[in-house]
Length: 254
Image (cartoon, rainbow, N blue to C red):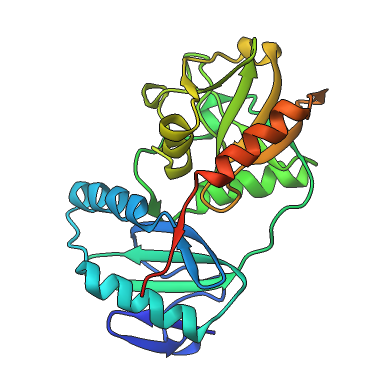
């Protein structure tokens, strides 16, 4: 597999990166969906990266360098549906493009039992092992994702996703004040799809009759159950999913 490092394409075996595409050290990153050589919502991802870079004291490459490197890695590692990961640290800029497989069935959510198991994050930073380990543990328990809850009993986010819940006919999501990452897909559904921002407690989950998992890769995935309680997947859910997909834009980097 080839990866982009600073100003050139390199075989991953000639870098300090693992086979999974994660480098050593620490920095910030963005994970972006690609489809047929086009990139979803690159501008939004780069604006979030800029905020994170400022917080971490990292200088980002110019827009021209980022776009050129993305074009090169998409050509070197083409996938009909891909996961583009852009990683920025103080001395390196890395771009990795790997195959992504869409999940083709509704997913099951667990609810975290102990809020101390997960720390809130406000920027997308690596190493990312804590979140990935939480997801792996959840999947070993037979679920697909986990709803995290903070010490105040407020619903936050998943290991690697945000959530939408339908309550009394409204689609709602949690506020940033709960201690969540400002997800790109979360911003899209609030600004373009009429989703309401509202504090949601763990006990409120009993009032949700439908839900979506949203992320930059998944876009919008229906939820079949929360902690074993079955949810609806009806015509309103199908219309909402269609609306989210239609409002999530992809563009060429050329």
